[in-house]
Length: 101
Image (cartoon, rainbow, N blue to C red; front, side, top):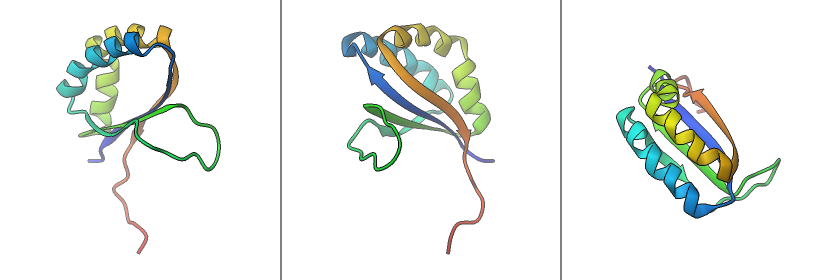
């Protein structure tokens, strides 16, 4: 079974209020097996557009990634994020196939 991922690109306008969202999403992420692979950090943007924060969260499965986002606990966290940030979030299935040799 392929893993699932949230990929988020976020610009935060009010970091203090954004921290309330971060605290509120910790429970649902843990409940559904979410693990941060990327959480801000240095980056270069050689092509296209970017935002100030980049996050990649791995889940044990694509279904777990969807279930976490749709969970009542996470749905309660979203209104803490949206007034103080602008962003893009995708939920994507991982790839388990052949790799370049």
